[in-house]
Image (tube, rainbow, N blue to C red; front, side, top):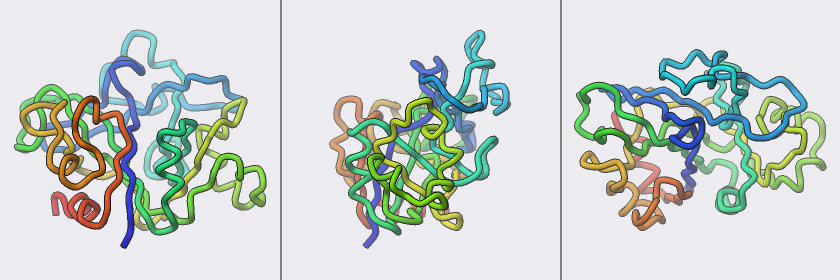
Length: 231
C-alpha cells in the first residue's frame, strides 16, 4: 500500500507578499516563492513566469526559487523537489519508490466561487503530486551519485544555489506526476484556517493551530480520496 506526505509550498503573504489565485471553477495558478539565497547559475524571475496575479511593486524582477519543479510549468524540465529543512526532509526520507508526495499551497479566492468547496478569501489546497520514481535521496548522499543520476536534478533550484543545501531530493515519475487542473481542498468551505475532513480524518495532522504550514502523512484512504477528487 503506497504512502504519501503532503508538503506546503508556493507563494504566500510573507514571500513575496501575495498568494497564487484560485478561480471560481477550482482552477488555480502555481506561484513559487522568491529565491532567498545567492545562486551560481541563472534562475528565472517572476516576469519569466508571466503570472496573472498582481505582484508587489518591484517583484517582477525578483529571482524565483522554482521548487517543486513541474515539467509542464515554465522554466522547468523534470519533476524534482528539494528541501533544506529537517521538518520536511525527515518524513520525505521515510518514503519509498512508488509512494506519493502531494504539494499544497495557500491560495487567494478570486471572484465568486462556483464550486461549493472553495473557501472565502483564502484556503489551503493540494495543487499537484509526484509519484516517486526512486527512493528519496538524502542531501548528504547526493555527491556520491554518478553523473547520470545527478543530472536528473540539474535544473532544481537547490542545485543552482552557491551552496548546495538540500537535506532531501525527490524525483517524480513522468506519467503520474504533475500540476492538477483543479485544486483539492484541505480547508473547509466556511473558513480557510479551518481544516476539512481530509486533514482531520485522513491525515496525520490534528487540524489544530497553523496546520496549513505543516507536513502531513496519508495512507491508502487519504491517497484514494485525494486522487479521486473531482472525477
